[in-house]
View 1 (tube, rainbow, N blue to C red):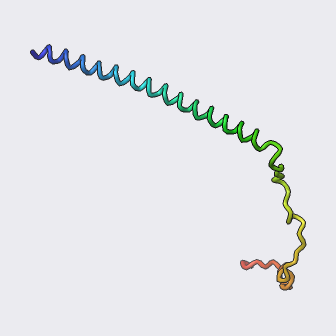
View 2: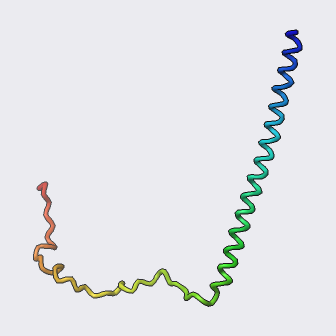
View 3: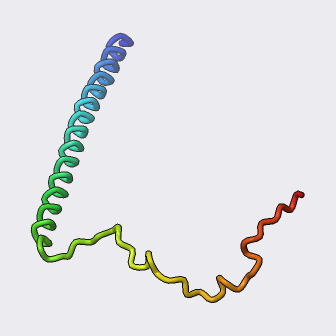
Length: 91
């Protein structure tokens, strides 16, 4: 009686292990397929966006700064006569 119960328990544990392993492999394959589908959808959306905006939007120059050569019109920057004096407080 004990021997048949032990053998039955081992068979059940092995069946659960094999079933779990096969399910895990199936789940792993479906996850990789989902990632590739998402990547393909993103690439298709990018192609559609590129073709839709081609020649419509102006090119944006990120290096240009319109205020790069702006004049200094702040009146308070020239009011302190001691702004160029450096003092060492530890001397």
